[in-house]
Length: 443
View 1 (tube, one colour):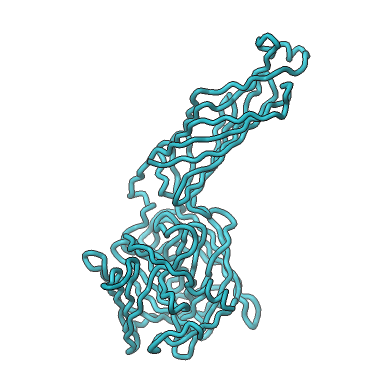
View 2 (tube, helix red, strand yellow):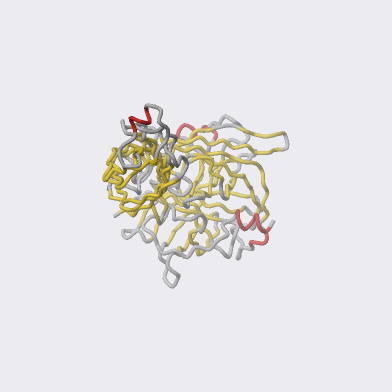
């Protein structure tokens, strides 16, 4: 239980430096069990605070906008408590949602005397005033990248009142689904870490928790009790659709399955990233910033049928450049790929070094083969960078009369790399296939 609790309820300390964008999952490592999700859209933010009522049941409060100071150091806004239709209802009736202002909050993202990366969350709710130091939760293998990954607040404008807050850290995601219990009271479910099934789809277990009242003088993390209650899947396309007055570009489907006393509650709902403040950076009004990615590749070619040493391998190395791509942005882009020293053909030779292709065609059998390389090969590339397990990824292919080149590319916070496969050589021998890997650095 302690292990599940630690993984679930904001376990790992962060200590990262203050960032320009505050979108993330924030917590207090000494008070594991409550947290604050922040969707920062540069000129405004939306916060959801996950905590516990006086009876120990989970409750969430929203901070749906407010005001930044001129230097974006502090943010202040009103706090609301919301009632609505039960999560157990497959159909969500937004007319049952009632929001009530219950207080106010101030978040200081650079409090005096605190380590860099800390923030001070001060709230006044239902007569309770308290300040708590918070910091970003550390998980996954990268920082969140609002606008390029899943990090944001997802909701359905036709079903306003519920939502899913996601924080993606490279190869992992922490999500919180805010909904309502069977009595209409606010209820939250945590998705503490996910399993990716594709670059745009993941699943996770669902948990609920009970814990100490937010109004207590101190928070006792030992009092937090966690229960596994089901699972959920999330399918996301950050570039689908067009931005509207209520949604940024991007669509998702959210499919929870919750175990209840009367059976499993299961359905699917659609969502988009909620529109407020500035639009997500992936929207069309933000210019791409293409860069050249320069590096090297290594490829292994296998001699084909028709060669005396069929099956033997030859290793080649060359340079590689990818031009015209903004490697920080998801979405469709076009550029070019240039390779040097790429083997593209095996030519059979006789004992005297003369070409034996015609003789082989006359049934004279296999001969020694010599690999031929292209000094330079440049091909157009046209692909869509998608949010993947590690960051952004894509794959594609290019066909020519000489052969077919296929590739995949993965972008991580520290590197860009992938794999190459080339099929060609059907002139004097049977077609052959070679494969290898590459890495490059954008500059």
